[in-house]
Structures are given as structure tokens and as C-alpha cells.
Length: 405
Image (cartoon, rainbow, N blue to C red; front, side, top):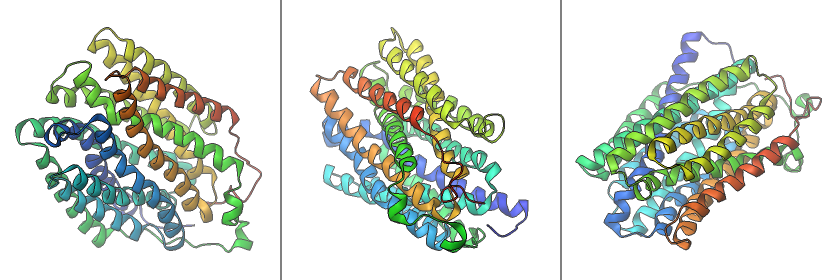
């Protein structure tokens, strides 16, 4: 358990964590819009554009496993501070890239920072908050990601249209370095008092990786991440190429569904801690069905207004899925293995972020610029989420998973 601390200190520490997530999401979602002018300037194909986005996720996936182990062993402080520094520095360098190979390499290293932040943050939440309020805390971090997404979509479109795409990354990188200094100076969450293996009945790592519960959740998170990152990566290009919007309009209109997702994430987190406690499975299934139906209807929509409506409902379902899945380990997994458990989850999410943009780019190229096959690829992933949701059951009588956090 964590040491006692005042509400003021707890909120201040969490606000620094929130700021780190905001910086990460600005560079993450900013690239989804910036890739349009970058592709034109560097003469990239759709497949190459997908590779630029995916390179970030490959390294992110690799880092999550290491970050999970380090966070379990040493706590969240070092992992989070180093992660935000890497994200910030290589955001600056993104703005300096002048070739496909250069930007591919820079985004790959930047992903190492992104891989450490979510896993370290999962441990941080268990250090700062009691179990009964962790879903709300996690929903606020997801809110930071979505707020960053809203700002990035709007600002990248606006700044790229006026000053060029490079300026956006200079601004984010500078903000991130200031955030890093604040983390070094002030981010000191209470250290956890770790129990011994005999006291906690904690699973050995090799036994953890044999767990059906772990792999059901990992597959569920992988497929939901395929949908989330595949859709968000290609949405700006879809709006420009299929709906024929300019860059500033793409950024502005993309904000509306992001805002809907933001509200849904915060509300879902609150409800999971209150009225819907223990019903994470139901939230996942409903969210996946709603998202799948809306993806299909969005693609078939006759005009941008109708498409935007379905996209907004999709974002609500997408946020419901994410919040419900991420909350499961925060509420039900023992303190001694939560970093490694979430490391596996975020590894799967990062792997999905690597696969989905490139796969969708290849499908779009392969079908002559049509997005139809790419949309059905995402719908197929949601079907798997529903199946995993139906199969999922937490072993509430197993102290190896459920601990007194």
C-alpha cells in the first residue's frame, strides 16, 4: 500500500502526470494530421505514410514490457520522467526531419518514450489512489489524451496551414521539455511497500504468462487498439481524400468526435467506480457493437454531416471499450504484478498501433485508393473484441490476481 498523503499533494502529483500525457497526445495525434503535408513534401506513398505512423508504435510496444518490469521494481517516477523527456526531445527533432528515413527513425525513438508513459502511469495510479477511485483517475488520464487529441487536430491543421507542419512539433517539444523539468523537481509519488511473494501469493512471471485471464484481456485490448489507432491515424486522410476537405477543416471537424469521446471516457470511468462497478464486460460488448455499426454507417454516409454524426457515436463507443478494459487490471490485479500485467496489455496496444496504420495504408493502396477494405478490417477487429468480452471472467477467488491494493 502507498504512504498516506494530503489531498493537495495527491492532486498536484496527478496534475503533473496529466500534463505529461497531454504532451504525449499532442505529438501522437498531431502526426495524424501533419502526415498529410509531410507526405506531400517528402513524396510518400500511402504505405510509406502508414509506416511513419507505425514506426512509433513498434518501439512503443517494445518498451512497454521493459517499463512494466522497471515500474514494478523501482516505482513510476523514473519511468515517467525519462519517458516524457524522450517524447519532448524527439518531438523537436521531428520538426527537423528532411527525408522519409530520417522521420521514420525519429518517430521510432520517440515511441520508446510513449511506451514507458502508460505503463508507468498505471503503476502511478496504484501508488496515488485507492482501488475504489482508480477508474476515475484513469479516465482523467484518458481525458488528457483526448484533450491533447482535440487540441492537436485543431492546432496542427491551423499551424500547418499558416506556418507549416514543422512549427507544431517545435511547440510541442518545447512544452514537453518544460514539463520534464517540472517532473524532475516535483514528481514524487509515495513509494509502495512491496509484499513478499509468500505474503501476497503473487504469481511467478512464467505462471502469469500462462494465465487465460491475461491473454483474454490482452487480445481484447489488442483488437480494440487496432480499431482506435487505425481509425485515428487515417481519419484525417479519409476526410481530405474522400470527403474533400482542406487541412484546416479536417482539423476542426475532427475535434467534434474527439470531444464526444472525451466526455464518454470521463463518464464511463465515473460509472465504473459507482453504478457499473463489476460490469466492465457489459460495457466492452456494448461499446464494440455500437462502434462497429457506426463505422459501417459512417463509410456509407451520403454527406459529411451524417458521417460526422456516426463518427461521434463511434468515438463514444470506442472510449467505453478503452476505459472498461484498462480499468480491469487497475481494480482487480494484485499490486505486485500490475506493472507487468499492464506492460503486456500496452505491448499488445503498441503492436496494434504498429500494425494497423501500415495495414490500412496497404489496403487503401491495394484497392486503388478506396477506404472500404480498411473500414471492414476495423469492423473485423471489433467482432473479436465482442467474442473476447463474452469469454472474459475475472477469477475473483484467486489472490494471485486480486490483492489488497
